[in-house]
Image 1: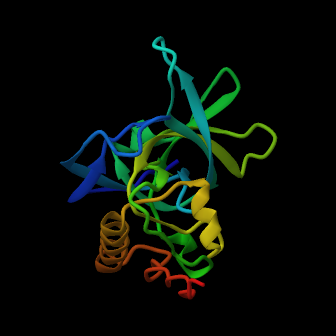
Image 2: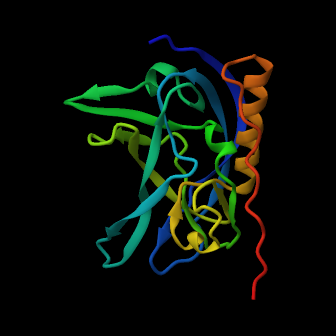
Length: 209
């Protein structure tokens, strides 16, 4: 497999909060400068992935949800992510194929962006997370992603506001905008094929009764 790689420095807001069963606030957040590498290879795309919580029972008797398993799509082509292309390439070990969740805007023309504005919104940050391909359905991969608590935007949920009650692979509104712009501008400037999609349109607003 030929791998195309081009490095780009981009500022990405990475939230490192953890959620406990009796806590509704993130434990903290920080800015990190990450090196995003563009690779032309198979990757896991989680921009609209539904997720299931992974529950931990701590020694002190409390429960927490710090990670989630998200069902993502296995895709070919250009994506943006952290780490070198050879480190992100699919790898088969003992009959199971592993790969990394990275970003593209492939679904931007077929899905609308759902805003979940609650400050207590639970969502999964799948960028750079490890994934394993579903043995029964190789078009899907399960990615284990850290949980965050904050307002978020996702392409999942089919514009149902009640979908915000579930966990989705998502991003902060700022990160969502940055990722869309960086991916679109870079592929356009370098004439990479296929041409990138424009940012996804937002879900129609609804009037609260």
